[in-house]
Amino acid sequence: LESLQSLQVSATSSSSSPHHDTDGFCMHHCTKHHHTNCNIPKLDIHNHILPKHIPDFRKEFGYGDAFVTLKHDPLKPNTAQMWKGGQFFRDIDEKCWSCEARLADMDAEGVRVQVLSTVPVMFSYWAKAEDALRVAQFINDDIAAKCRKYPQRFLGLATLPMQDTKLAIQELRRCVTQLGLIGIEIGSHIEHWNLDDARFHALWAEAEKLGAVVFVHPWDMMGQRDMPKYWLPWLVSMPAESSRAICSLMFGGVFAKYPKLRFCFAHGGGSFAHTIGRLQHGYECRPDLIQIEVSGAQHNPRQYCGKFWVDSLVHDAAAFDYLVSVVGEHRIILGTDYPFPLGECYPLKKMGQLIETHDKYSVEQKRQMLWCNGLQFVGKKESDFL
Image 1 (cartoon, one colour):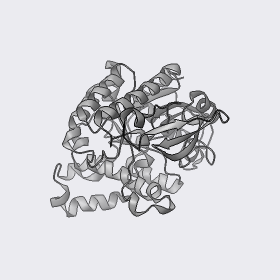
Image 2 (cartoon, rainbow, N blue to C red):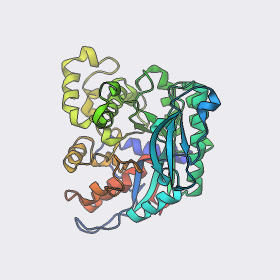
Image 3 (cartoon, rainbow, N blue to C red):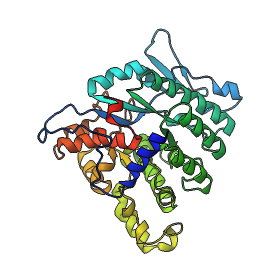
Image 4 (spheres, helix red, strand yellow):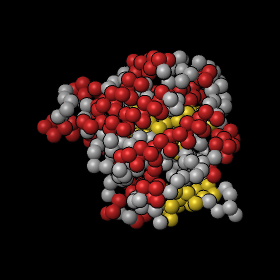
């Protein structure tokens, strides 16, 4: 744990510089020429996994149509159905629960490490806190077991009962100090509370103390009831949710108060980078509405670019280039959303495809985004995995 905390200090101390050195995390650098494929290893910060068997929590607790369980058909051993209460939710295959199935894909596409996290539908923030703790413990124990089985291939993020900060801190401590998980995955908001709410500050303080990383994933997307057609909550609201999280933490003073706490945001940080001009102008033209918890030029939105990480999952080379221009190539980590359809993965894409095939970046820059930045974020060294 002390080693992890020392790595965290190293990562944070360099966060203000767009040209900091990551050699402590990534020792071996590729020296081949621009556009040359040098078999860069990859660390994937954004992918999801489930236990193969999930208890019927609705039956156990006596309520909750949103609790998820899996139904397996013995005639179709490599697939399952996700059910929410009594309603069919979606079909999934064994890549959602089997380490061995995903390792085959990882090996084929050069992904050395996946940082495992649950599917956001399992968060259960709406449930009674003690029941959400039971669900979280079941999920976290499963993720930890997978990481113990393949310690050079998987790291794990915990889920927490965020509706009760005391229980969330209790489970965070267990997961980091007993299970060996490296941090947490949380939603972009928790029920009707944004992430800057005072109720969460004790959790941020504990996570910073423990050296735990925080991966923020959109969930319970805004406006779902108003736009049910065309998959709009996933296409429109998810990017807004990630920006909602970043802006809440930024304007709410969380980034400033806990500067050593490492945050990473899914889907390239959503719409944040692409609305940075509007955010900056709003901060300057309406300080009465925005500069409440933090104020002054040292806290304007552009000053926070490069102080947190985002994943690479934007699906477009031009959008990716702009993201790099805003947050810096040192703060982008490969994220695939494996094994789901909106991800950069099978059946339409390969993991890391956008960065690998991009003709603008050198091999060294690609290595940084596919591998080294991820190592720095999770506080590990290349020698831990290669």
